[in-house]
Image 1: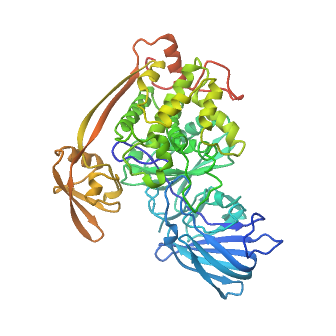
Image 2: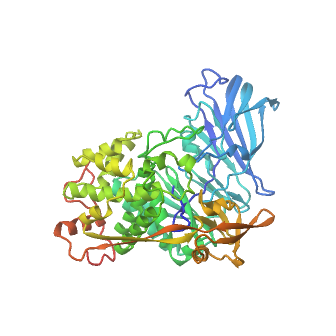
Image 3: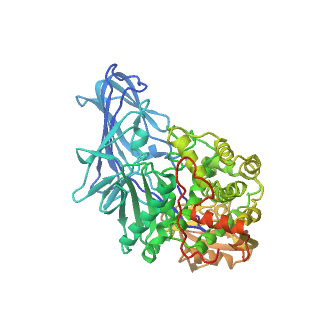
Length: 624
């Protein structure tokens, strides 16, 4: 997943829709299931066509005997590390027997319901309003339904590992497309298990679909929302990104891949969420109309997740326990290194210039330097504590610091091996030894893999910069690649990070502990004005704050529900870092070679694990 930064940012978003039929096989058998025959679980989903406010879901469980069955909704969605009360959006849940007579239902904790089965068949029926997510907007309206899965489909406790199936009833005029495999017709789909079911979005409604191929493998581009952009150029861009990343790993590990793009008119930013063989991405329609390249970073990020986190994964991230927080110290690798490969992919596939990549890396340095807690909180701690810390924190980000660690690790690995081993080799190693073996890696395995590949001790690097909080060694390590590094900073008036979307400026993020939060600003508020001056854009909002004096009080006018409020906010301050990274005027031959090979994805030795080292000359490379 990639998260939008309100002050200095770009990012990624996510939509999804689906309905299912489950076939529960002979896994651990829940009480109430008939011995000797696997139960059959079938989901049917239809849309409320009067108000388009909710979905009607029925779940049939066959081959049961008398006894209790427990049904639950997940409390979180893979890729979005926060506890959610999806069950609060469920209403009118009831159960009936095969003859239509009602069965007793009892609520179990926050996320479950227990049904007293009498035998043969249990049907659980309920209505559910898909959760609102900033990356996808409304998942259901009169034009479409996007089923993400965790907030829609109950699972039968003890049988998440069994095959599943789902069928959809479509409103007249609607079409359907899914990351799931279809059977019989295009409205009935199957998945290997519950995890796969809720990791494969389905879109119903009015959309446009394009297809490109990687060899014989189809890649679908599904667009919903605003048009007015160059779809052909967009498809060419996506194919270049996918071709480079599949080439990097030497495989195309899917039968079909689907990009679900939701284009928001009026938005200035987006976001996304990865799935096993698909992704849901939200795009800013205004930026997209100006250039399809505005979607390049999020596309590269989410497609790279096809490997990193979905297959090369921490051991705790699959099979999933949806009832509680699942913690790992390694999200800096799963998310941050994925962010690092955004820029590498784009420059190596010819979509970015070298100068653009260096500006982006300098920008990420600035973001990290502006994290007030960078000398007290490690990136491992941030990974572990994301469940409490949330994405609205202004401190260390595992996306940002993880990106920088990936970059420094890449150059350091090249340096200590005379440019014979790179981070690309590490990714292929992790794919070969973990993903292809269908097992997750454990804490410490990344360092061990680096040391095995390089033959060098990297304990100092991981102790000081990954587990520790020392300042990152930019100048030294970048110097190995013939890069000059300049960093300065100043202090500016600030009320904290505030992010809003849409023409009405709906607040979706307020920095925790900030002056804005202390004054009472909340997600869901609508920003109207500062000191009577109407707010127009995020950049203008930032300018209006920076024109104030530190310690002064400003009046922030907002709408909350049906009333307008005036919130007095005391202006604080923040560090504003300025970073420049550029090639040296007179690098040594070794430095120049390392720089060129880093940019093109090459090394100076034999390929590792039988996978050829590829690479493309970056466009607009200038003097290197």
